Amino acid sequence: METNFSVNCPYCGEQIWMEFYPEDGAHQEMIVDCEVCCNPILYDVVFKGESSRVRCERAQ
Ligand SMILES: [Zn+2]
Image (tube, rainbow, N blue to C red; front, side):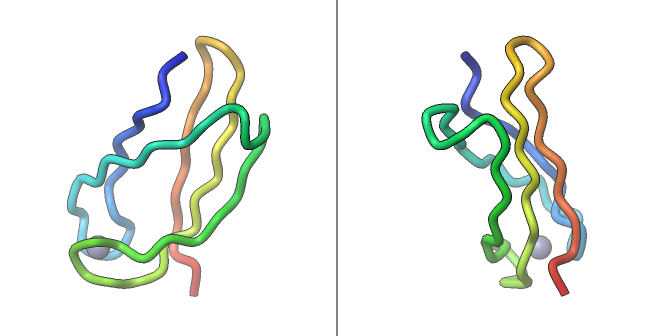
C-alpha cells in the first residue's frame, strides 16, 4: 500500500512528502510542522485501500 503522500503546505504552498503507516491506524490525525515555513500543519489521514488519502489544513 502507498505510504508516501504529497501535500501542499496550507501556509507557504510548498510541496511536502510525508510518510504514514497503515499499521498506526486506519484514521490518523497529527500535527507536524512544515519543513519549509515551520508552521503547524494538521494532517488527517485515512487508509482505505486504493482510496487512501491525506488532507492537511492549518492547525492554528
Ligand atoms: Zn509551509
